[in-house]
Length: 257
Image (cartoon, rainbow, N blue to C red):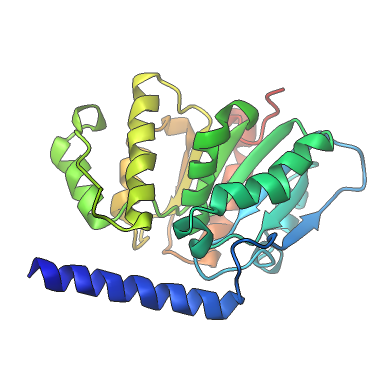
């Protein structure tokens, strides 16, 4: 049974990788496409958006995320980066964001940088923040995919992340390892009370609700927004609007330097 399970996991991984590669004609060693929305005025504020599994950078414009932010009074420059799951499993996600967006941004005077990630982009934003937390003001996650079923069960069985003893992931695929390493880091941050700059929003009917609630359990309650809805862009818009509406109370998108 275990062998069959492993074969099934491998076939699913190969299928997802093939579909994604074909959909995006992707070479993970090439710079990623960027879509900018600038105010035209000099600013040291930047918001970097990371898309979901089968989405591209322009989805944030198509779904009015930039427009919603402008209507809410956001004066930061905004940019979405075309990273996806192959960057993650090929261990190139952090490198691409570093070289194609982050380092250039810092060199061009952006000091107050935030990450906004949707679904898989929420996972990517947390993984990038893990590497660069000293130089990023915070992370806004919308309906993030942050844990698979085995990991969810492990942490749920521990009843509290403080008592969770991470298992071995030596024989797991790259994607599962990324999830595992993220939660090891999150556990460390919980012990340091160091998660105040992570924000979460999700729909109450989201299909990834079990993993999302694991993240909710370790975050400051004021940093959490819930709305009615599932795992889709319509719900994402509602979350984003509510997060922006309450940002004066929560500190979301606030400068930190």
